Image (cartoon, rainbow, N blue to C red):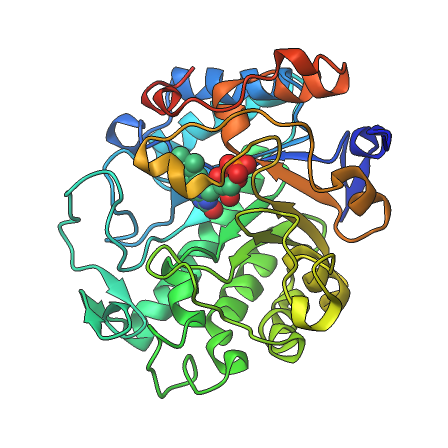
Length: 372
Ligand SMILES: Cc1cc2nc3c(=O)[nH]c(=O)nc-3n(C[C@H](O)[C@H](O)[C@H](O)COP(=O)(O)O)c2cc1C
């Protein structure tokens, strides 16, 4: 068996050194009363830092736009009370020796998976659609777009000021930024739309450029991207390496240091028709085509992928399948995010490090009900 040594070796990106390769995946918990992270959120993240994870990406936290969230338990990343709450979170994580970045989010026109709540202001998206031929809310004006770009930049500037180690923009899973990428939801004819993925990437590039300007050159920016959308698991933004380059390279040129490539099972090849069933995964192709550092993710240490979690299903613990260490050793990707295992077990990374494999218990869906 391959040694796990590489998983516990440091990695440096744009001046930030992480002690190991494990990243806590961003996971919405929707438990922020009045949108303000409180002591229980600080303690939740502190416990994961103490449990050995190299980098924490917070749950999605929303920018300052009227309808940027689709659930009242999602925390704000604007306003003095929410920012003070986040400062406490960052301090708690740092005191436990961890590193942390907020995942900056705008949910676009998506519906909440957990509630029927709707924001008071109309939901907004590139073309007033939540999916192909599925109208919801309003199409954003150019003024709305400029204000949204400015709101991402202002949130990123706050993150840096509060002492966070990096920021991540949520550009995946069918939310606002991905609604610009996706041809099914972006029918615009202006500078932010078009027939090609390169054209539909321009909104994200504007947001990244504004964020880069706001945080300066020496502060890591991550962007989470996915092919799949919660509206359509089979949808794809890029069907070939050329399209993937057209999609992602301008974003790296605009200032992204780390592409966080979301897929359900990290060992699955992105273009098996080109390099076979053992071929590069999404993060592998993204790294090869853009040169950026990449984070992979998907079912590490678990028997089932995470879509089942929302239907109340748990997942059994497995060994670290999919040749994780070998893939990082070979440079396919740099970091690996873990989601559900960390909801159920804050000490998962330290248990893997210490080879306490019999103590790895998997994921229990009932653990989503509490923030421990
Ligand atoms: C309860 C829950 C909430 C999630 N919330 C977010 C989120 O806010 N932002 C995001 O990018 N992904 C979110 N995801 C996806 C995870 O970040 C991750 O990609 C997914 O769980 C796969 O990793 P896993 O198989 O290790 O759990 C969420 C997943 C779960 C289970």
